[in-house]
Length: 503
Image 1 (cartoon, rainbow, N blue to C red):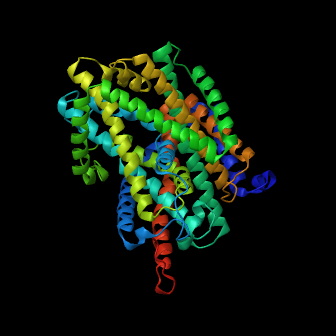
Image 2: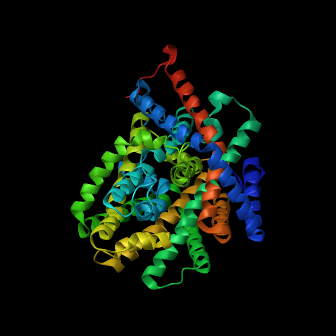
Image 3: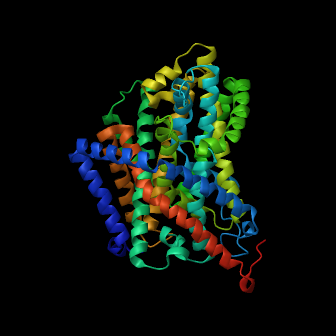
């Protein structure tokens, strides 16, 4: 699509204007912006927390059901199509786009936060039982539930795009239910773009904070918003360089590098750290995760009160939903040729498994040190969550080398996320084009960076959380519609008169 046509596209122009206005309002009226955001956050969590929990649980049940049914053999593409990317590259792309810097940020911060302030009222903190609950809940938050949200969005888009040769837009994925209506389609796509921008801005902003924390820990660089602005500028320059090369070069190469670096540092910490404890905590944590899955998935506190579930589980699910238009479209783009069964099992099992191992290694190392060596990592994390990973690395040999590798990993994850998101946003605002114009991608990359910085200026992490949660609410409804659309579209595939048997 030509640049002029892109600017004439109402999805691009309206979305860019709305996001641009958010940046301007946040820059010139930061206090008011923060107050409005907090009000929206409170309203959303109090009134719609149940909706997030129920929606994600329904999505999980649907995906498992369709993958084990006869429809699981259907390919995301023509019957004779095969995957475009190798399994390793595919997993690397999924991992980089779906988790990336967020997992690096929270893999120590979350279990240590739950260890310091437990998820259940009356439970004694910083004890062996508190450590067990902290690890099990961390596994739950980074397990299949988040990835089910990504998978449903990806499946809906991929099936219509590659099987039916439709555009890779969210609106196209729900057409089997809502029908063809230009106004409705544009509204849905605008919502998807805004939700994507807010979700990506959350993660990019977190990476600015964590990179600053890492540089402060290793090189004594001040932990200051000015440093985070410099990090943002460097990230933007690196992203623009990668963006020129496209999906099959820049993003593919960065994704492979991310996965290699992640596996390398994880293996080093595993062998240098409390190896047996890590293995034991992983097995026990997985057992607790599996046995408590339904309870945790639907946990609320209508009788006892308390806001822990709203601050953690409901925030995570809303974060994933805000992230899902981007991750779903990206996962769809790199999954052409796979069967529905391969797609669902790969997306919902492999990245969550890596995440749980990652948390066991890094979070487990920090928990072990506090329980057995008298360190105070939990207290430090409670004071400054951005240094969590580097505090954990400080208790294993070769701390400085591991910290430098971690800083590099965070940076490459950050660049990959921005590059992937700008590609998908470019596609969303170019009528689903698989090759959006470079100028379009650059505009979205700059806007993502700007909104992340504004949110940091106006309220830091709390403002990022607020933006993510409130942007997700309308898209939750769209994801539920997408379930019906997928089922309807696949049912049509298997009518007796045009049944296709995929191999």
